[in-house]
Amino acid sequence: MAHASDTIGAILVGALVSAVLSGTVTTQALIYFRIYGSEDYKRNTFMVALLWGLDALHSSMAFASAWIYLIQHWGDTAIYDFIPWTIALTVALTAVVTLISHCFFAHRVYILSGFSWSLTAPILVLACGRLVAAFVSTSEMITLRSYEAFVDRVGWVFTMGLSLSTAVDVLITVTLIVLLQHSRTGFSTITDHLIDVVTLYTVETGLVTSITTAVSLICWLTMPRNLIFLALHFSISKLYATSTLATLNARKSLRRRTHKSDDHVLPVISSLHEAQSATQGERDDVLESQMKSDDSAPRIRVTQISLKEEDDVEPGEESRHWEEERRRRHSREPDCLPPV
Image (cartoon, rainbow, N blue to C red):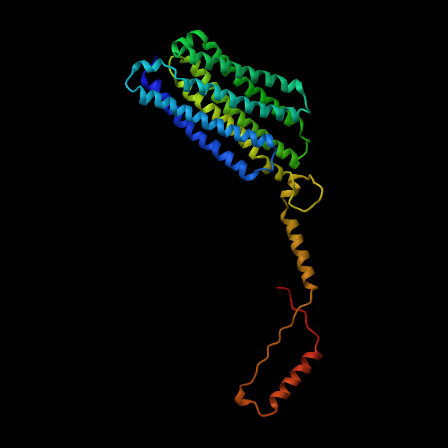
């Protein structure tokens, strides 16, 4: 086996990175329960709780592996080739989380394709094949307890599992992109804009998981005698769980984009340019019409009255002054003040 930096050092770094990503999974789960709570389908709520629990179990197994390597067997060079059962269990947990995520996106393909099993069945078959390969790898790791023996005897099974995972990611991403593009109306509508947003989001989520899995596969094929591939493998389940939960949480914000801000009872789909932009000339016309309507509105005339000081007013003159002012005000019609 390789040196400590490439083996137990890689395990430590992988466990720390997975802990950071596990915080992202927890954040997405809390956001889901805060936004949707009990309003969503029960199957989605159960899936979120299951992913959250599996992620926590996976993180505990990763740190338990680091404890075994760095604390229990500190200074023992033979530990570099030893496979603890916690490492083997992380492989199985990653496969289960990956299967849940693949089934979730396969269901989206099934809905968008108009309930087409011809597009959904290959995704499910490849996803189940990846799960079987991971379970076989876990079983062999627990039995052999040696990286050298595992690479020489059943290394091809682990290779097949990572390859199938990458293939399913690419297949799901391409299928969703094609189906979304076929749903376009061909006009600059809000629907087309929303489809573009969903397409970009699909590409981003698919690339993150597929690239990470592909890099782990490359490290496994080129450097099977160290554990760098395993450090990357720790992060795969976190990324799958995050992409699934983030997709669930984005539904409400995407739905709001399909509705205009007015109070129509029925949904209205209009041009995005028409809904969001207006020329300066149009705004000036609106202001001018408002000003014209304001000119015809009645105005209140304000009359300033200057009163004499109390000392200069003769007895009986004050009452006559107010009576004359009252008559003068009633005899005049109110003038129209200019608009402000």
